[in-house]
Image (cartoon, rainbow over all chains, first blue to last red; front, side, top):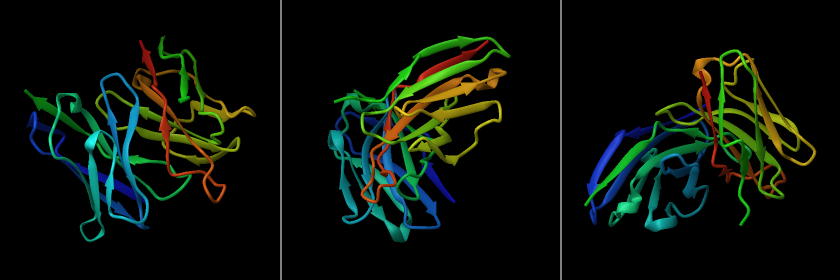
Length: 113
Length: 117
């Protein structure tokens, strides 16, 4: 079984500030990890994913995440927040190909001018 | 690029009625997943199909059924609707993986918002 914990249901940053959204996972096997973004009344868009290989993965819109096995973490970062980054962010884990995604509870990111 | 298509986008039903949600995966994708997202909640996996066969089942009520057809589109049938079924229902699709058993990448549709009154 797998589970995801996102620390902080709401994160607020100023425009231009560092964005850090935390995600910890629990998995009985090496996991596949994902970050999705959801804008109001829209679907889920894949930001980035980790499957194997390089532990620092880069995604769209300047986001990146680092897989740290020892800490069972997959935190999402962006050096400089933009107003358009305001959205709900979901961390998700999968046990492998053709497997369901298990999502965290989500973190609402607010960007202040 | 083609995306996952879901219809209808919005649906309003009364209690005890039935509803059918449709999902058209990205061309050449062979796996379809259904998720339910309640208000302010994270998406919860309902059911998935690979090559028209059910491949996994999550927290899907017995009142719900689903299938994948020969053209790979999928339908989620919901009967005896309850107020608690009001949610956003997402469909996602995956392309064939290297091993021919699906891919880890899931592409989500825009969702169908079901409101039960």
